[in-house]
Amino acid sequence: MTHYTLFETEIGWAGLAWNDKCLVGVHLPEREPDTSRRSFERRFPGAVEAPAPESLAPTIAGIQALMRGEKADLSDAPLDIARVPEFNARVYEIARAIPPGETLTYGEIATKLGDKLLARDVGAALGKNPWPIVVPCHRVTAANGKPGGFSARGGVNTKLKLLTIEGAAFVQPAPSKAKPTSAPQPSLFD
Image (tube, rainbow, N blue to C red; front, side, top):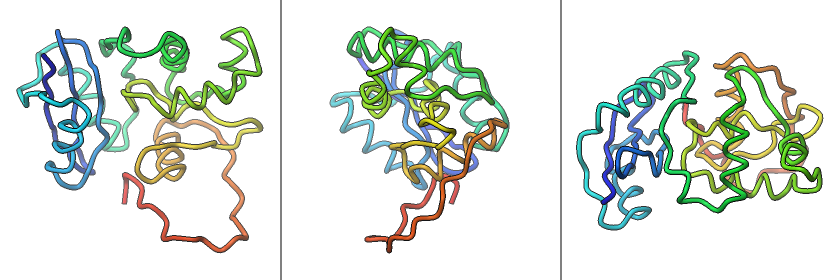
């Protein structure tokens, strides 16, 4: 059975989902707890809200620290990695090994996987990351120090803020000369 819990951070309500004490999902903070709750109920039909097991307390504390603007290492969080395709699991394993304050490019991860032409596949796997922050997809950047994409609320702005908190060096994207087609999405930190 899958369980989930919500917890408050400095910027909103985040959550964890688990079975047998291994994480099956992480939800980044939302302003309202009901938004996070509905997300878990969509992702994990039949999941039951419950207090987190003690084994997940360090993960919750680490996410809360990061959302306060403090560095946090979540590399020891227990993941149910068998729930994801093998390729994605390999990508997530490499991403989890990136220390706070450092980055790798999509191409560097592809090379570690044995084929530099897999960079787009690496990006696709990271876009499906069920454990954002815990599997630090924000530490994976595009070539030449560009930030690349980020599928969480706020997109690349959120990614850049997380990298700043961790003290990572990166190149700021050049301002776009094109007119925006819609209002920018607020970041997790707005």
